[in-house]
Image (cartoon, rainbow, N blue to C red; front, top):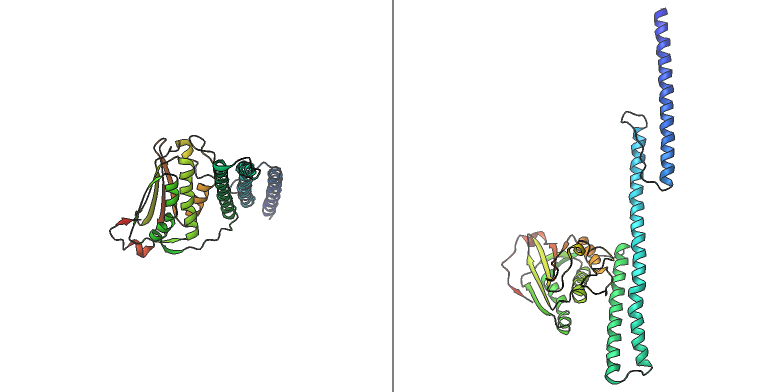
Length: 318
């Protein structure tokens, strides 16, 4: 009986000591958690709670670590957005103010009678073009704000992309001719059934073509539509100055502008908007370029499943 009592007392003592040390260890770990959370709150998001798998606090520690990582990701995204907005405001103040100042200068000269005859007509024409440039710039800004505010409502439906593209490009022919840009447009007569938002698709084409006219210094552009692995492929190629390989990596980033061999005109948003719109319609856009040998943009959109199974031999026309 005495042996049993002694064993019970020993077990009880061991249990009490084990509980005591466990409680001490848990209290120490909780204090460490509190210190780490204080550091995180003060801006040090690199702190993590270390805990062995068999520790009582392990589930809590791992959960807190996940929360810290999620917090850091959101904070990083917020900082990036804040920096992008700051850059946008800087770009906006320059890219709007400069042409607006020029526009006012030409109109003031006309209004005050400083110019007359042919020179007056030239001033009016320059002012008109500057006004159109400003409108295009503001349109791009509105698109960017709507996309980033999730306010760009898209109505995706099945459309016949060949005819749609043909009709859109007809409006560009006078512009090509006015800029003395030779063009070759090769669009098959057969239908391409694709799920698209027609307004977004028009904005994509307009942004790409505007990019060619504003920056490439090309005198020839080729636009070809084809069937590629159950996708509609639209390839735009120009013979302009091309893009440096280092710049090519960044051309779809918002506010990125290629300085070498390209004019300062533009918002730095057009290609970024095009990429966002393409991806929102389950498509893809890529660019290839060689300095001095022009640039090629390739758009790919999935063909509707039943249309992809019944492709016919292609003939082509505008």
